[in-house]
Image (cartoon, rainbow, N blue to C red; front, side):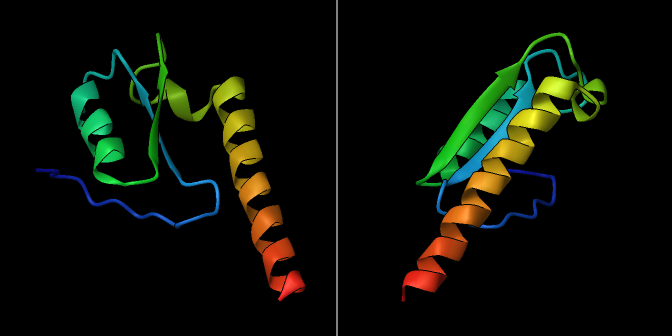
Length: 82
């Protein structure tokens, strides 16, 4: 099914796959399939960033930081409440 190793951390926000529709190395449908394989998976599709520029894009970076930060804050609050 997937030929790439994937590292993931389950968060309270679920999991997100960020994949560019024009990625020439890994077809977009593989990112979509990966997101679909997780019950809490979501696909965020970018356009025009390809396989490498996606890692340096300010919008992708800020969205990823917000996603992880929200998840980390929620996990911290859950631990403090118990």
